[in-house]
Length: 292
Image 1 (cartoon, rainbow, N blue to C red):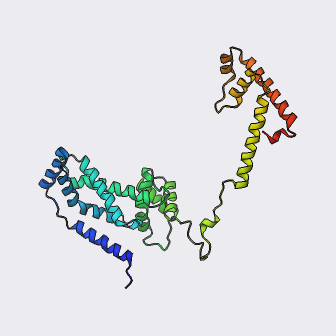
Image 2: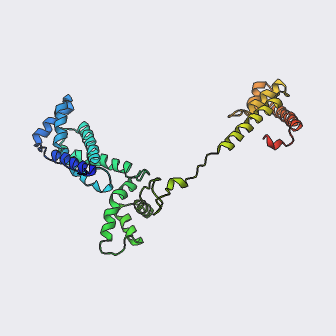
Image 3: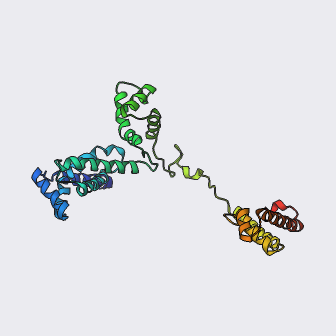
């Protein structure tokens, strides 16, 4: 008999969910006692009991996000993380049930997980984008319920923008984004089973011959520069190095202070040094553009 691993995985997930849903609910007095024990004494057994008892709340929230193509067990695990955040920050002295407080943390962590994993391209970073991501499909289905069209017209987009208090442009961009899916580079091109998209990617890096040629040119430039610099006196070498051969070149005024001369004198030294170097290079090389 052939065993379908996906089917077994789904059965295991359902068994896990059913087990979570069997955990008994807490009375208000029990809930307060456990949250106080964790808050004041870091009683791990109390925290464990809180997590177990409110796991059904996590499952209920995770089921709302099951249509985004992500494993339900992963959504539940993220919801449990939100439950832990809630337990850490909950104030038992306030007249608020832990479940009321926890559901907001559970929702927030699951939503963040969906946004990070629904696509390799970040989908929503602003508040408006997040609102659209989680509500656009529902509102779109309501507007198209009695329409034969599968896309919104301008009036429909404006209606959604007004409902969610976002810009019309944000609605248009999110609708376009949600209509597309990530495509693997290993996917076959249309019905062709011999070619994949990856084979048509252009490598923009230089080839081996270009790399070797560039390295050889760099060596020659260094060689000719060394010869040209040898024709300069010590002060001229200092000025050329400071003005031309550093990532952060010094100004004429800075060099003037270093050498105790005026900046105009520095400019004259630089010009004379460049003239000497150019003369040396022209003497040895037919086309100076081959070097610089």
